[in-house]
Image 1: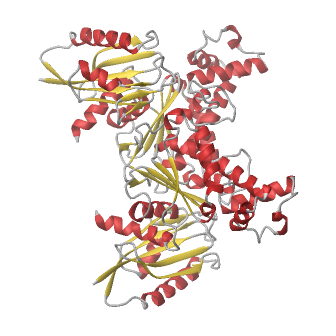
Image 2: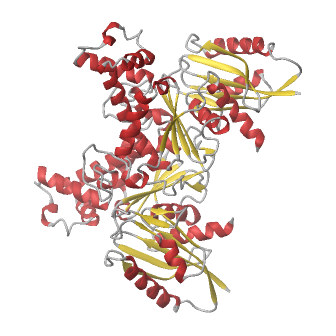
Image 3: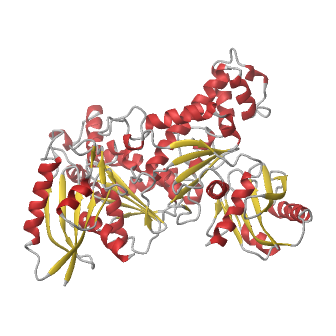
Length: 319
Length: 319
């Protein structure tokens, strides 16, 4: 009988889900909005109804082994989502328990970036690595730290929240309530804010004058950079500078073999990788210079996040 | 037959060594200068001759099981000391191999702060903890990260070099060659530099006007603070601010149960702990607020560093 794990990736904007097998294939995947639901019950009603529909697409007899969930501020130890800055549901949400009421199966939850890091290790470019960091550059910035071949959960269950380390004193307001957090600069939203800051300084020669704050996204900034738009190029350099400097700090913490960049902004290729690598090298101590690779995630297809979430269960079953 | 492990702790100024037993007792310990030897051979000749003398003080029949070494920029995987900013021996020193030629026994080496963290876990205040960070505040700043009950060595073998993360852009010159490293602010030397900066700004009302740069040490600054010297108090606040802010970053990496402060400057009690804790709390993201303890090391006696170094071997023997 075919065996599947349900993978659910909860992003600030969209939720992606699907059924994965042990070989890294994803079936009956679907996408639904996250931010359209003000309360968690409505969101879950819709999620379960979508999963029911998706399940009908699976062929032949099968068995579901568990549910793996990646979510912002997801706590592995308790299965809760706690005060997630990018989600509308505030406070502590007992998400794994709520899912468990519907599916009487093992349910594991961690932050979405931790899940992506597991996916990179199980299916992606980190298959032979024991020490690496994965950074997700989406609406926010997430991170997963792998040390000695295991995810770092930490005492409280949500280690790896690099998006909320301070990089600019009294800097940009962050959804978490603090100011100057890394993700307010280094993320798809962060680079947009940088573009608007630069437009205010000197807008000459840039096609980015034509977009509202709501319209502009990181793909448009990438497209402008490809056409040598000076402001777009400067925005990428500034983003890579802040990210690269902070990665130098992270390297000093865990001495990784590589840092993987994942998510929308990472698709900008050299425009983001070159400055990130350059400023990381400028700032790491001598022992680490020219040793730590900065690589694109190899989970580039649309199912990457779902694979990562499901990897939580597959990894546990392998133990 | 009594069993011992030789513990060697190499600091920038002094080397401490002794023979430890499994119960956490230290025998025949001695101290010798580190910085008096321009080349490593002379240093080792003296170290081995001191160890020989010390060995004669041990009573009854005994067996030496191995040698554990804590050293700045010590690489666990290769047993080398690599480009240590605080040592006179430059380049890559195959220290474990050199010791191994003299003692045909297991020799393990890691950075001195990693060794202290192991000591804290085996003999000190972290006996029941699986996730914590230990910071040494001596001539420089070292750090050891414990994740899931194990030391984080990282891909290259020297993870946990928090002393050399950048905290001030184009800041103070560091022995590592970079500028603005954490240890140039938060260490016994760092607070002295801060005092001199403050004296330049406004020296009124401070007894610290009476010391040369060479004379001043962190104990004198502590003694002045106890007498409410305004400049000394301000220096502690500034030191705790920079350290606390950076610890907020480290907490986001590994979500520790506690941060232990160890070494000369940590002996200043509330003068350093209060501002460190305060600024850490101000800067951590909400999920971590009021959860992470900042504690004094419980390895406060003079043998702490030696115990930590020897714990490298005892821990391995227990496996």
